Image 1 (cartoon, one colour):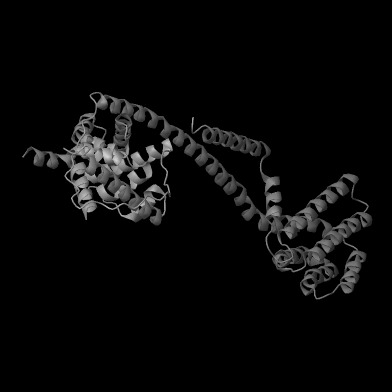
Image 2 (cartoon, chains in turn red, blue):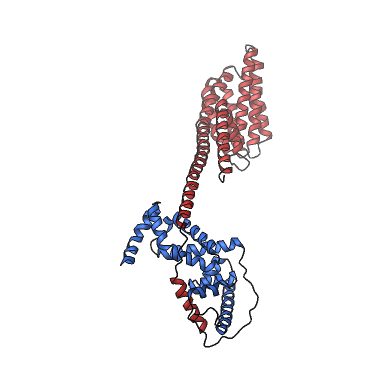
Length: 254
Length: 186
């Protein structure tokens, strides 16, 4: 076909064609290349600055997490084993009353609903009070057992209630029966008991109804432990880093 | 002999130019600018605009020289960049219309003279609407497939084919009228 010939012709002729650019064309291109070189060099610095800011933030987060997590894991069991018996020993040495234990016993009978593990926790308490001589050892055992059993317990609310109840009763019994205790001592005992109860509650909150660990409860506990000014510092660093990154990102096109 | 030597040196030149060696860049430019301006001129009627597009194309070539893999031909690579640059220029000018108007089917004379010179061919192509011209040049001169043209111009393959056939019809029309009047044929 003629048109095909024309196309062939066109391809051949235009393919070979060369048009000489204007005399200053290279200078123009050189100027463009210079402009491009200037344009590209500052941008990497911006990106580097932004990357550093991001790394800083990420690093602070990670460091912060490590700092807060480690005491939480180590301290919990140690606290339970060491602190509890000390408090308990004070009570037992001052001759606990039968009233307290009897009340607990009654309560147990009322709310026995399948809570066998709770029973195990409470039963030794009664026997302990009958044999006063060996109380310290038994008390320790009892609390070790309690520590082990608590996380397994499926119904933390009931356990918590009972713990509060028993602690209150212990304090009341100790104070009412023993005249030697001064007002200050009563206050100290009450404060101790209160802190114990709150700790018990905190721990029970870690385990939700389906035995999952609650992140909020863990965080709450950890936050108490963090040194306050350090916390403020970390937040300040975070804020600074965030603002830096924000401005870097916002200005990257200018 | 001289040409062979130049080709031997080309890979060397490209390597140096990639490291922003101005001299090497200039040599590459001198070597290819004539052909590349011709390529841009196929798409763009205005010579000043064509040259501007060619320079922008070379700017891209030099800034992306590290991306060039020595597998294919260097000329093919920069030619492709020039075609893309020309297309985006025409697109920015918003001159491209892929019109659907029908062109009357005119027969062509058997004795049509196809021995045409460069200026005449360019003139014929220049007379085509932008959309027709782009597809025609890409297909007939640069040897792109319809699928590639469709991708580059962001149109369907069907549109590419119809643009080509319309461009051909229009060219034939021009050739017929010019043949009968002997206009522009030496």
